[in-house]
Image (tube, rainbow, N blue to C red; front, top):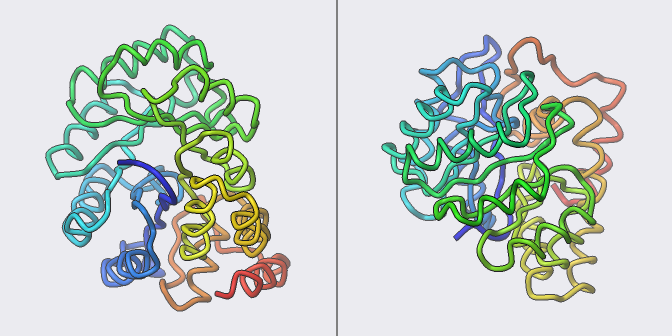
Length: 290
């Protein structure tokens, strides 16, 4: 179910920080029109860290209703408290999501045993397809392949999002998991190579801005067509880099604003994209034909 270009969709906001549901619906339709393979609301790009619980749940429910089963919806439901992650995952499951993305607990730096028990507890509590998400650059916690191997016995852990950005890690995880757990890239810059190594998709930031070419690149790579995948990736490689000139989702929300898809809203402590980076991002947007 979870393959191809899965967009970690931004949460549109008014300039006062309130969620802009009108723009949110427009953004959802933009992705469906451009062949995005799945939507991932309320992840890092969706500013999950600045939404309260009520807003978090409302955003999940909104995306599920508006998508209306046309493509899969994978809700971000991670937390650094296991009980809180279970609570959010239960709500998402009851809302009708197709899966849940759960980041490794951040700040409290659990052991590998703690990571295993955390995800086991979520999987046992909620019968939803679950995707543990490893992003050490944000969490100060690295979920090792030896821990992922233990997930093979948990039937509703169906994929791993690996954002460490190292192809050797992807290769090792693909070897361990085979066809039992899909390996998904969480790093746009190395995503094409990850798919050619046996990964099944990418949960992408770039896909917010260039969904068409992200989808086509993934499709070509999944079919083993390196030449075609490289052609598409060349169009969006600038976005892979420049959408991280400042902390995600600062640059991507500015790009979507320039495209006329959302308003200027972003919540503190995140700030509007610095003017000194505008030209670099605009050039990569032009190359991607957006």
